Amino acid sequence: MSAEDVTATGRAPRIRKRIYEVLERDAVRDATAHAVHVALVLLILTNAAAAVLETVPELDARYRAELHLFEIASFVIFAVEYALRLWAAPEHPRYRGISNTQARMRYAITPSAIIDLLSVAPFGLVLMFDADLRTVALFRLIRFMKLARYSPGLASLVEAVRTERHALVACLGIISAVVLLAASAMYVAEREAQPDIFGSIPLAAWWAVVTVTTVGYGDAVPITLAGRLVAAVAMVSGLILLALPVGIIASSFAAVIRRRDFVVSWGMVARVPLFAEMDAAGIGDILQLLSSHTAQPGEVLARRGDPARSMYFILSGEVQVELETGPVRLGEGHFFGEMALLSKTVRSGTIRALSRTQLLMLDGRDLDDLMVRRPEIQRRIRDLQLAGRSPHALRPTGDVTSEEMSGGEDRPHA
Image (tube, rainbow, N blue to C red; front, side, top):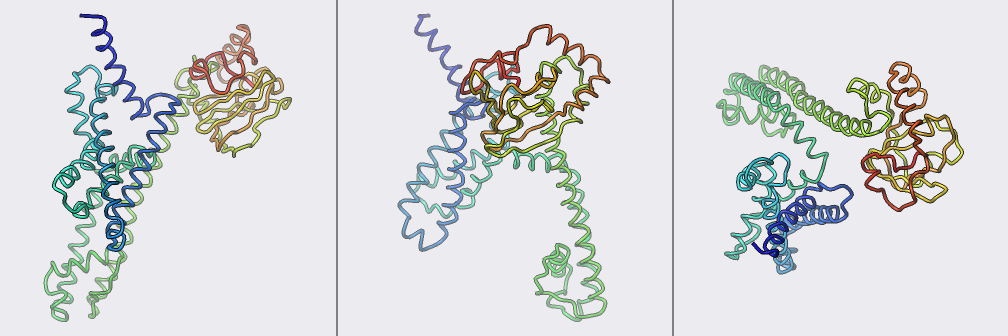
């Protein structure tokens, strides 16, 4: 095999890995991945808007050619995206250890891949046969579901529904039983008075569904005393029953958000050198002491010369540490302020929020109490001080370095 063949053979996995990093945002602070994701989100939203506007006869007649060209371009982009995701599937951690073909087959049957396929396949047939795009408007709106991949909130909601699917199915069964009972009772009470509306249980079931769901169209109204009593019970039952799935989804959604935030916070705390050797129980104690703060752009979190009272963890956003040697930027997943807090000195730099930044704060008094309860933290502090960890070890730069990303020594400690 020639050198050119070896180079070509090794280039394909690198390209595939890079495509996976861009499409799945697997790399940290990847400007290309961010730009691609923003562009895809905007394209999805624009497609949804176009699908809605095409149903307006005046707009469709005036801009039919432009909308058709936009659909062709969207079809090409989404088809290429689907093909690239399918090709890069072997790079996903969950498919490691199996063949490339098996990895792609497993990816192809995932919900996100099926949505991607449904968002392009019908339009390939429509464009090939020059059919009316409005005939597949429903499939165009499926593209809107692709946003679940890019939105943590939507992904959390989907996970909440999936987690509580058994409870939701049970709620649906209970509601169906109540609807059937209400329809049967209303059939008995109103069949003679209104045979055209309540002359059978299937006819009465429409009224029962409308009443139990609290919609109340008013097209079917009981006129007998017995019918009104049945309606009153059905309405009250509907209020109670509809609260069940809402409460289940809301509590599950909140639990998913808490788990996600807990994992993120755990990972950040575990990366701090001061807490690197603590066990799970110790890190759990620290998490209970953290408080949250949202800093607005330009807000000064600490000034040079101020006494140190807290250390900070960045959940999202970006801050700038203005040291004497120059400014340093820190972003999501970083921490700062621990050394000045531990050494009981003043801040060596001014810390300013560059964007809207979500922070977790650990108060110095809570850290002191924690050190009393966990002597291993005091030992770790002595080790760091003996190692000569300097608050000015970092050279000024406009961005974080690889050492900072790993929580290493080369970072500011204002």
